[in-house]
Image (cartoon, rainbow, N blue to C red):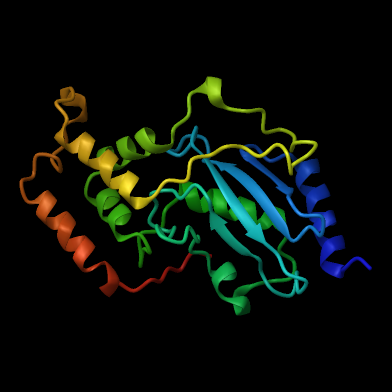
Length: 227
């Protein structure tokens, strides 16, 4: 017998396909509709536009009384995304008391798209990303472009989910913090044009400060207040 959650997720899937939101696709990868994959592109006129991120979403039979578990498979270098687990920092996903039964799959994905494109710098879960964004937005922009931006020729048609999602799943690189640091190091030590030279890169204390951030990483509260 099919569960109540199954029928609700079928409804959510129909809603998502009907609205065809720009930069958002999602589809179930299990027969019981409990496991999903999704792809989100950043909003237009932001540094995240042109960057695509794959997520996994796990629902339970208790949906929609409780929220699903959402994790970025392609972890963005972002103040509001845990760099180790890939979990986004959104109140109604973290706290069941903030969850509302009127929320749907579309609600979740649209909120994630807005969060991605509009970082909240208060109590970040990725302290390095928040610090670089605060101190030097040009460097932060360059890191995002180097790590995540895809040329137009690589973008797939995201208007429709694949007919067989079990066989056709996008191959999206999962990026670790070591990749972030490697890319940052290459940028910081390169002999690039003056366009890429920023006051932060010319600061001899920056590398030392970076290691202080890493040393103190565990001391920062893993909190956020994105609603």
